[in-house]
Image 1: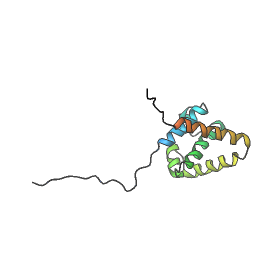
Image 2: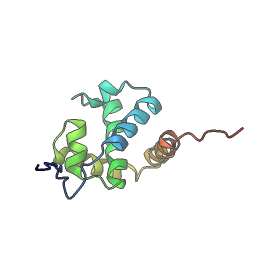
Image 3: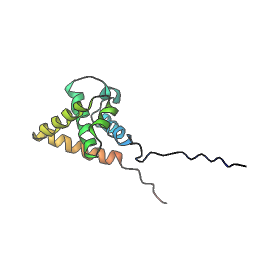
Image 4: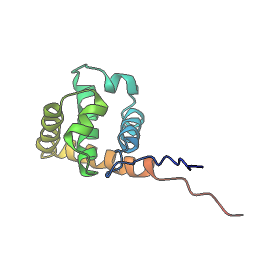
Length: 119
């Protein structure tokens, strides 16, 4: 009797997770009081572009590639690169720098796992 055991071949590199990208977008939707669907839409309104660009910049700090970020947001990778440059340039102005830092701090708190109390 022949034992036929099939072993699934797993890829060398695990597939990338988009959980952090989703959490950044959800944090932006809450922080900037904008629906997530509108952030992911194709609109170019400044009140939508800035939060979206901040998410893309923070995602690049989390070591996501521009291609992975673009895929999640439904854009091309050059748009992501442009938004990263936009954020870097606008952060030279004090108002934008302050808002970006506050948003980054909010994202850290927003994405932190909730610790359960042991009582």
